[in-house]
Image (cartoon, rainbow, N blue to C red; front, top):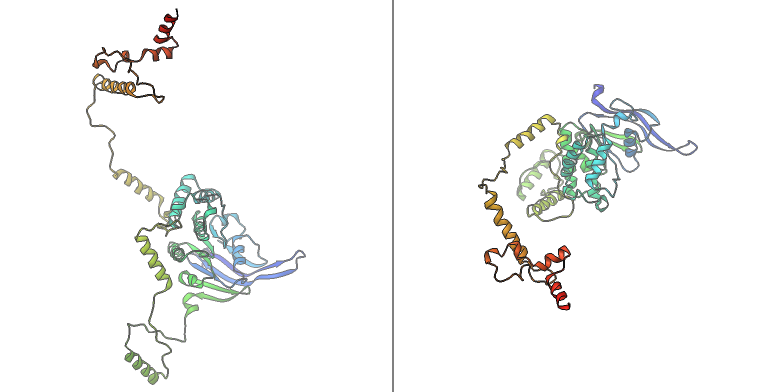
Length: 407
């Protein structure tokens, strides 16, 4: 196989942890050999302490190997150019609890040198993809483990990596989230991503991985495709519609006569618990029941689809051009200043003159002489003269009368 087709290559890889005196304390990885090819989903399996996490950390350059050969994209894992091509979801989600999902993804986008427009677009698409749009502005400290796991997956994809490393990606997720992650991995695999998946949930690995390695005690115990490792060579399964009891007895007799064997068991098939769970959730969604947690995700983020950016821009321009134009010009006939402004001013003055003050005073103009014609009720001459005098600082008419009386 061409060298460029190998994303990760390990040969005789070893990792030994030592104490302060450099004495061997534990050999976590003991001479393993494996290859991860481009565009495949590779499973790394094994019980606790088998060396899975140690192997992943050596691929990421977080640990240095003790012996052997390890290349990532044809380079040493410590090369910083390699790290820009990798997305990583650790076994435990460590995110800043006081940041919300939008701020978190924007922060990691800055670490990868993405411009502001790209960060904003990818943040919206990733949050929709993992079903966290409705909680985009809630602090991470309020999230459940499953919701934090969803955000961790979005964080691992923000740089559009060529190699995606997932350590227990479905840990803490509900069945809906688990199925969504598996569907996402299959879709990313179809679109050319290379994925390294480590999980204790063997059913998840079985559903999505092309090839897998099973470790125990730091050594490879089995390697191959799912079909090669899971093929049962001791049984034959026949699937048909529901048979009558007499037909089953006849088949059993025929097997005894022809093959010298008997039917081991006869069972009626049933749906899986996962299928039942997803059916119940889908019915609740169709009934538009409210939920404060994460929802099922939307479509896969567009930047992960390997689409041409120019094509996306052209689609946006077409959508803007085809949008209905809203006219902002009024079709009503224009009114001349003499015919339109005068009635408006008169109505405003009348409201001001007739509005009672909050202190319980009489309305402005209530002391106007009764001899004033009704057509002039809204004119400035109808305003209380004492109010004007008070505003100007001059003595009011009542004060002048009191002064004259005292004199």
